[in-house]
Length: 470
Ligand SMILES: NC(=O)C1=CN([C@@H]2O[C@H](COP(=O)(O)OP(=O)(O)OC[C@H]3O[C@@H](n4cnc5c(N)ncnc54)[C@H](OP(=O)(O)O)[C@@H]3O)[C@@H](O)[C@H]2O)C=CC1
Ligand SMILES: O=C(CO)[C@H](O)[C@H](O)COP(=O)(O)O
Image 1: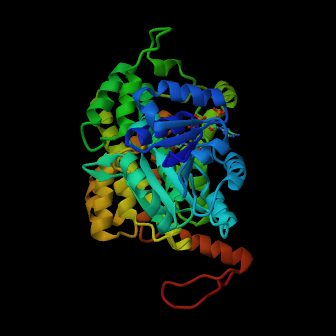
Image 2: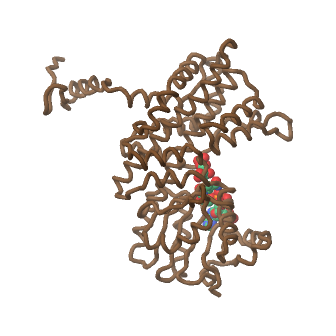
Image 3: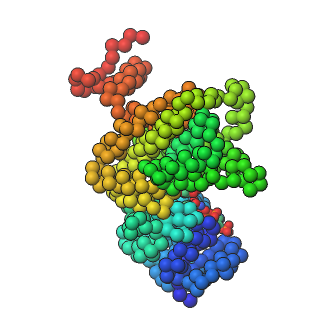
């Protein structure tokens, strides 16, 4: 009894790997899973690490196996399941035990759970974890939200299991209550935009330039050696180089073009809208997944309108392909600028004091959007604390160089009928952001015309009304 230092509930993809990671770092861990057979198999398959694992058949066994005060990680699907698990655990716990929700919770649920547990004596942590199966096993990026005292109690274990970037652990306490899950949500929103823009470039290469999967694989591999170096570009090269064992075709050619989504990207877009922060590349990426899911309608629409695509001319194929690298880079700068602007706004709204340079630092390794580029973002926030990444000196030069290629790419895509919603949104965001005299003067006039909403003048203070006659 009471031999384990920590507990974990939910031995699925993430939980099983995180438990092995924790055990490997020398922390004895008690585990429980709804399906008992999974717990048994997990312990049997753990090999030498089995000595550090206490498999439990019931939640009461789990509570009894952990030394109080108990830290218990929940790694189960977000939503009602987390509430059910908390409800089932509460009678088995004692004061000062810490529940750690490490799933992809909506931060608003996390805030509610903090309120519900307030005064119970139990501590709560909302913890974003990124890195997928491999990250959980070998070092994820970990975003912690909760009381500083709770963080200090679990810090050693989390530092031990987190990814490392040049010797620095990719884990940090980011703020109170929902801060960790909010940052994970925005991580996923950026992940959606990154993936969508890569997919759009793939579409331009496939349908515009007529490249085969193997040729594209080599291109992405080359790009991964430069400023686009990132896990997502690396796995794109690997995916494109992979053959389907059944047909011998590139596997990407036999996969249905209908993307799944579990909610975090949509939440990122919703929260951006709620705070009136433009996150158009993220929104476009979410919408693109939703449109991808409307397969039957798209098939019917193609029959109505004809296949949209005109291939690029062979004459300037090299220049077109070279532009794609810069276009992807420019789009990435705009998308990350949006994600970080959303976090900046949320930090003010919820008084989290989110350390944005630290967020960038803990995303440099372990997580799905890990990249060298995040080191540049960390430096930008360390050096300049910009209102927007597009205003940070180190990105101004990069964007000045890269946006013409993004513009040419979006123009070519539009002319060829190839959809590039996230790249277009990134370009429109950049162009709108850098336009000193926009067109909202007309919007203000229209609002005043139909609703007497008033407007400001460029040459006098105060509120004004127009001399409308209509
Ligand atoms: N997969 C990924 O790449 C990532 C996932 N996440 C998040 O981590 C969490 C876990 O994801 P993942 O490991 O992929 O999911 P899996 O589907 O692989 O595992 C889910 C786990 O939750 C358990 N579970 C499901 N329903 C219930 C229930 N009603 N009561 C008790 N236990 C239940 C399952 O038990 P049983 O064996 O009985 O079904 C299983 O252990 C999710 O919030 C996910 O969004 C976060 C980062 C990355
Ligand atoms: O959190 C993750 C990666 O960071 C999970 O893999 C998540 O499931 C990704 O979101 P979606 O399933 O909506 O693509």
